[in-house]
Length: 307
Image 1: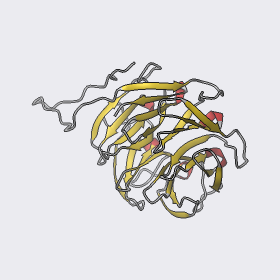
Image 2: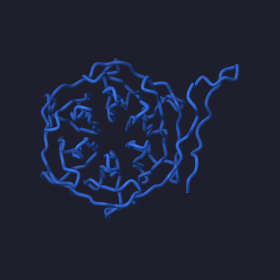
Image 3: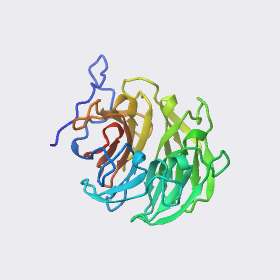
Image 4: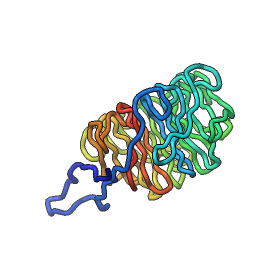
């Protein structure tokens, strides 16, 4: 059933004018799919999500240690992976990203490596390995591909982001542990806009940090709380064609939308398992038509919303 999701009230000035210059259009709930379990088409703590140009939806099915693939309407297509340390196996897949050629990248989180596949699940290569050196990883989380087909990896427990070529050659890195500008305390999500700017969810600092294409720090926004523009453990991020940034505000069980400069636009979601509600949401992706897909971690499902 289609419907609009109830949102919190937008604050107004004493003169009655809304300080938010953007129209207040909540995103309509379209559909959901999944269900708990190891069976085909079911999910167990889904986390990262990506959509390719053919509108195939890839899910990092965390606790099932696999990648699931659906069409944009939620029909099951395929999956691959199982628990283990082999090249065809995962120990908790957390992030996924796709490039323009249809290649899929997945973060094999507890094996501390990145794995590359063709769009139909054929293994290509992997890289990483536990450590703190350049190109090494410690609990890699979410991923994003830039216009040059390079992969940015959130190296979560090393409190940094790293950039690699599509074949895993290390290019650069940014960040270290801390609360200062350009520093992180358990980063998780990453998104890239059409100008190549990077947005990273700094989870335990409850903020979003923005970096230039080469990893140079630009700005930040957010603090801990429940108000507009505030966060409780921000996780997945996505950017649309309008340069708007979507933040999975996981602890507040909602999605918040911002401009690329951090100006609050709107939000939707409340705690629950009904249509348009969330139970600890995690990942988010936007397709070429502006539809929004969210992994509802605690409800073992995917929810789809309109532009």
